[in-house]
Length: 250
Image 1 (cartoon, rainbow, N blue to C red):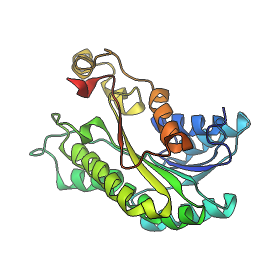
Image 2 (spheres, helix red, strand yellow):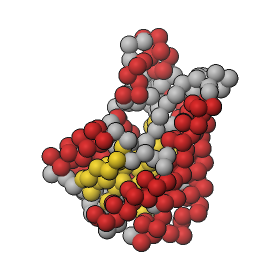
Image 3 (spheres, one colour):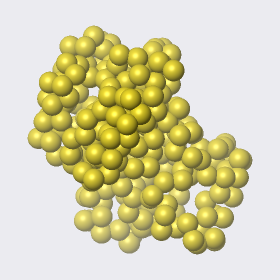
């Protein structure tokens, strides 16, 4: 307990799945959590869970693709807690399709949330973190930001962009005492996979390349988030932490 005591964490896409798990664990470890999500009902439910467990949290509605909303969220968080120490860029979407099948609308929507949203967060959080004396930014990418896979061209391009943006920001922000790292989950049991859960062939294909032969639970990614958010990873920046059950090992 207490690995992020006294810190303030802003988590995007905190209403469900991995984002909800990240919020709950950070709160359990002592952080005050600013939960943001485009889904106000789910986001407020996460914040309420934290408060019910004796933690400190607020919810702010937030579409990460919009710069004005980002600035408003940061301003409200600083007004409430006086600082922001941790940013978890977790919000993301998946639209499946090979490159020759994807529409421009699919591409633009995927990039807006998965890449532009991360760019805006990394850009606009700097003044608040610099004022706080430094901080940690954790960008949730994917193993599909590292390796190729079928039927996910826009998603892969967006997550590859997150991987390299992370390294660029790590270089640029070191002078401000801000560390920037990325996490690359594999197959995680989240609502994104709900539509596939009953398709045994798809599930078998997803799992056959994992050494551990199972999906991960969201909390298993959240512990990696906690490490990078905490001072325990004080010498890590520009790193990519893979949490994939061995998917990319062979």
